[in-house]
Each structure stands twice: as structure tokens, then as C-alpha cells.
Image (cartoon, rainbow, N blue to C red; front, side, top):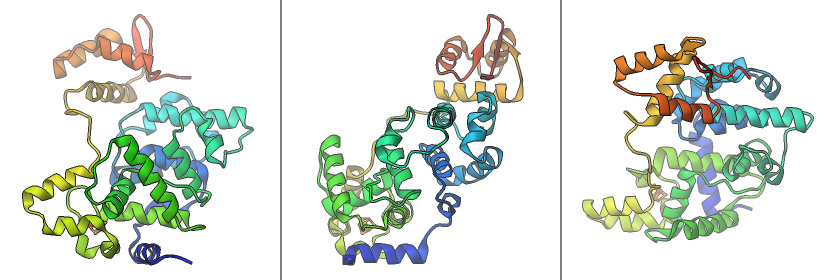
Length: 299
Ligand code: SF4
């Protein structure tokens, strides 16, 4: 028996749900791929890359047995390239140490290096439909606004409070639909910048909307910032992350590049010394360096 709140959210979801390719499968490997890609990358950018990646690496075995260089080539355009190697490591561990059996509990998933608590919960919900709580940025914001209104808390206390609330409100046996619904709500209606309260299925239950509607424009900005997760990243252009991406892009196109040529290329194009960035990339196992050459890792 669902509460009015659960019913309102689920009915809205069944009418309006987004058509996303990882929602047409319950295969844990495909869900894992989508979840790792979606970390720090927008849905629109992930969709074509997800489809292309699964075409090339249709299962954990294919991915585990490919060279890191090949995996990195298919990760092009997604950024945060360490994720690609992390994903491959997880699949290697499952194939080599677990006889290819994909874990199906949060506890076992968390034992895999490279899977954090959010990803473990997402796999348990979206693949196995288990009654576990999934709290991503969107769901956190939606719950914060609906149940805590403009309440301010330390991050850790807030997470604990939201988790307890989320456990209480989770409709048993509907974890997959429920979390998809909340994610859609956060992505399309209760957005970080402009909540569309009049279109929201949760409006009658929401503590935030009552305060928000009466607030002045200045107060509205302050209220929105309370429920927004702070972005700690600086400007992307000209950051080390930017140059790491450009170096990897170059290596995707050129095999075994002479170090001097690459250094010259970056000096000319960006007026940038890349020695320290190369060492950093090597430390992260994203490139292989010899005294003279640089390439994507072959194994
Ligand atoms: S009513 Fe407004 S603030 Fe509340 S959950 Fe819906 S969109 Fe968000």
C-alpha cells in the first residue's frame, strides 16, 4: 500500500519518464557502465558514448580482456579518464577472481576496488530492484527541499538525515521505478537553478515551495543555494585536467609519440610545459612513458 506521496511521484513518472538507454536493461554490467559514465558527465553526452561503448565492449569479459589503450580510445569525449580504467579494473576482478559472477549485494559490490557506496546502491536498485536507498545529487536536492525546506545542516549530518528519510519513504518492491522517478524529478522539474513548482507532483507535500513562493528574488537565490551541492571545481580551460584530456586525445590519434615532439606540440599550440602533467598521467596509469616515448597503456 503506497502513501499519497509515493503514488503521486510514481504516477507522474509513469506518464512522463525519460527514455534513457540504460533503463531498458537490468544487466548489471550495462548499469555499471552507465553509472560510471554518468559520474560528472551530463546525460546527453553520455547517451551516444554509452551505446558506442557497449557495442565495442558488450560484456564484462570483452572489457576485461581488452587493452587499456583501446578502452581509453572509446572513452574519448567523456573526460575524467581514470573512470575508464577503474571500470575495466572492476570487470577484471569479477572475471578473474569471482569466476565471472557479478556481485548482487551492496556488501559484495563494495568489496570491489573502484566501486563506491553510491554505485553499489545504484546497481542494487537499477539492476536487481532491491530495496536500497540511492542518493545522488538530484535525489538529495529533491528530498532536502520537500522534507527539510530551508533547513541548513553540516554536510554529514544532512546526508544521515536524508538517508533515514529516504529509507522510510522507499516503496518496497519498487526501488528501480522509485529512484528513476526521483532522478527525473530532480533533472527536469526540481532543478538546482529553477524549480518548476507548479508542474511538480510533490508540490502539496513540499516544505520548500511554500517558503520559496513568498520570497523576493534576492531571497530566492539564497534559498536555492542552500539546497545546491557546491561545485568545488575551478575553471576547466587552462586547468591540469584540461591538458590531461588534450594529451590523451593526442595519444588516441598517434601511437608511440616521441616525447620531444609532444612537448614541442604543446608548447607551440598552448604555450604549456607538460612534464609534470605527464608524470601525473603516468602515476594514474593513463599513459606509458619510456625515456623517449609516450603512449596509451597496452596492458
Ligand atoms: S514543489 Fe518545487 S521545490 Fe518542491 S520538490 Fe517540487 S519543484 Fe522542488
